[in-house]
Amino acid sequence: MRTFLTLFVLLAAIVIGHLAVLYGAPGFIMQRAMAAMEQRGIPQHGFRLAPRMTPQTQRVVRASPELAYSICLFDFSEGVDAVAIEMAAWPGYSSLSVYDAQTNNFLTFRGEGKRFAVRLLPPLSEPEGFSIPAPTQRGVVLIRRIAPNEADYRAVEKIAVEDSCRAIRGGNAR
Image (cartoon, rainbow, N blue to C red):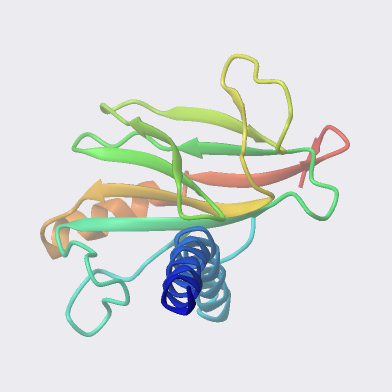
């Protein structure tokens, strides 16, 4: 009987530990990543083009040196009614991806050389057209553009200023 009880307690501890890591780790990881982004000056409700990826600037293990990354943090916790996101047109490969506070990618759009706009709504809002509710209060918007060399990266710099990620409060863009 004692062996059975010990085995049961051990198995329960393993299951509880596994579930804690499975459900707790993504939020913990994203919280730390977003705090690090804020410390590096990534704005809330505004895009910032990351420096060209080199071994010296690479902060993410799998960031590609052939891509230029623009990043925006969003947050609905302070009375934000919506977040309007626009990705400027780029003739080569481009994509816009949105991640929630649990590291889940809940929206991805490929640019296909065209400008793209979407509006994020707070969690539990009703979706309508290109207005999509975010699953969590906070998250990250990431634009990727192909820029395999310095000249292409410089061209992305000129285009990226047209990207926007702005908070809308009371129907007015901030």
